[in-house]
Image (cartoon, rainbow, N blue to C red; front, side):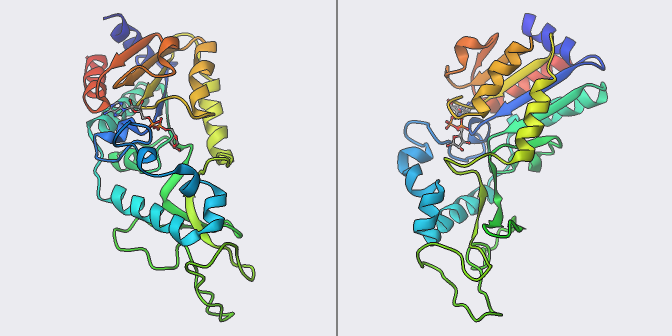
Length: 271
Ligand code: APR
């Protein structure tokens, strides 16, 4: 009813702007585990402090690399779901009408891009990118084949260094360890991602829409964008299986599976 009216207005004219923030819940329908769901969440099975921090990687790079490569292989075997595709349709609608659209994601599975989303800001990096911790050189590892030892531990043939698989810590002779291209706890988010997100949220005005999908809203700075959107007078909408830390502050809280709700919502908006 009223929400659809608001969404239609926000997606109708040249000045319309929609910013979407997604979390693990939007990929749950694709079989990608979330982090904090009680039984199935990754952090219910694994200790984030032992796997998702720079210290953990320094202590045992092979263990951390193997765990992230296991997650990389897993997401490569998953397919985008109806929720991802609904966001592609919403983006297409906005662009066709000359409005503006930006998708901020905390997810590292690249399912938004595989579904066809174009304006995606990866706030927490990606499982499919590995980076030399010294040179910053990035390697795209989006093949299903097993990663050779290279992407996380580089054989330094020229200098005859042995592969330091399983060795403790550190980089050698100007060559860094290859590490997962994701943001670990305690690390800064990529500068260009923060800049893009600040710009998108910072340009929201009265009547624009900020839509939060499938995030528990407990990790900052991502969780802070909702407050900023409200400060700028945007209409705030949340889609989640259950109420979250953000729910009390939003204009509309739609409870349900994003792979079902988003499709219905965009269907209504497109009328
Ligand atoms: N549809 C909609 N929401 C869902 C669905 C679904 N099918 N399944 C789960 N959810 C909701 C859960 O209710 C929860 O609120 O998705 C949210 C997932 O929350 P988290 O597991 O905390 O994931 P996220 O919010 O993305 O975590 C943020 O924390 O560990 C870090 O870097 C990691 O990017 C991650 C960040």
